[in-house]
Image (cartoon, rainbow, N blue to C red; front, top):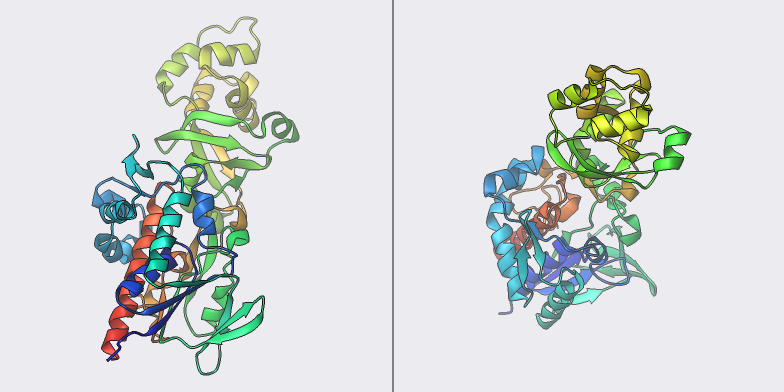
Length: 402
């Protein structure tokens, strides 16, 4: 007796492709649908500067990177974590290496070879990919409906995995349009919010014209050292992304988030105070700040922009500002500009196999679920892990119905 069932995967990103692989290995007929012209478009874009696959830090701090959703994600990360992902990639014929920060990259640093190898294996397993198929919902008898260049089509599947992404990078397919469809089915959806994003500060015209686009480094926020970039309206970059969840939530609650930036992480406040206490003489403030405080260019500009009366401030005030310059973040940049998104379908609405409790046979994976993570391999790891969990959950559910 043939036990194969027809399974639809909607979304050809990492989560959807991983679910497809698991179900194909289980012997099912798998069709993958995506609204874009080709698979993995956001995945390819994310890997343009060097694909960060996962991270090698120990399990406990790794899980902690997922914040309030660490407990919800733990079973999936434990079942398919960083070591498993590296082994899986090696099985595709792609070698990896660990950078000095503990991040894991493909040897060639690019996403395209990995995606090509993966799609080749999926096709060899019989997985069928259908591009330019935009899912619009279900018919009254729960068949899937797609808009295609040839018109509307309907497909009846035995099980469905939804892996439609969050709300960032809408031009690559993750536009969050699915939220209304699932809400209409009674599924609790937390609003999609920008994550790993930049923020508006509201610079003066003088500062904006002079320093927009300037990198600020090395600096530290909450003792985490790195760099950020001054934009026309605010700041963005790796160091900013690391505090984006906390800052975004604080802005929602209070209207502003004050972040204190250490402009001289290599020097103590007491040493700065001693240097700044020496007689200034006839030196200009710019010269004084450069020689005594070690600040020039954009860093000196930030002090003048954000410290009222900087030119006449005393040594104690200046030293304190250099070590903890208060930067008011007034708004997160729009979700369309963010690297990833927070919010999505509540974990309370799915079972341990990621099946929607209100929709038997429908499973969720990837950024559709309500979690977020910093950059550094954590986003991709959770997408792959939840994709695998949804695929296995669907396979178990189908097996139980034979």
